[in-house]
Length: 125
Length: 110
Image: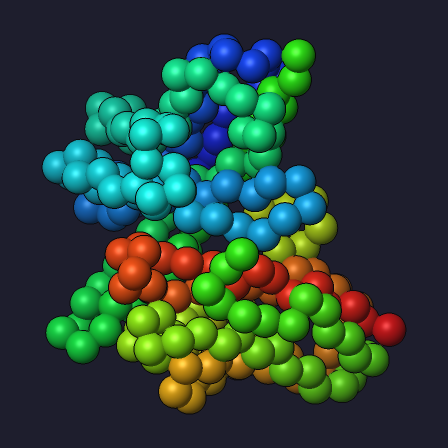
């Protein structure tokens, strides 16, 4: 059974650093992309970026490039999302999800088939 | 603001068939496959449809997806109270060079 289990809720102050985790099981960690998705309070889903743990290939949405760092530790099948300096606007629920990505030569076929339970990050002074 | 346009809300009565639309452009829906997600209140999103019209195992056949040109639709037949949730479309966007989500449609079962 595929499972993605995320670390617990965090309360931080502006300027703090933070690293949240997404521990996976039930499939081969190194052969699937893992994405991070943000959901701000009362808002929709936003793709932040993705990592392929097999070779650490990492891509970011332009909106999040330079703001966060995505990494993975293949020895413990865990992906991470990290901030160096949090802002109040980073307050949100963050989801990890396994990202399936195929290209049949004509189109990209991509979907998020398994999701973590979400990590609530609250940034407040 | 997402590049995928959708109605912010939809509603129906139990047993009814409802359709949720998602409109994009040639750089996203017009060129790539669409997936759909259900997010029940206070829970993580769940995959309903991938590759325009494919259902993962375990998703009831009451849920179906379709795509035509630069628009996609999710249909829910035999509406049930437990279908009350937010629904999101998603696809690849060439300008973003990554996946993009629609803004979400809140479905109310009256």
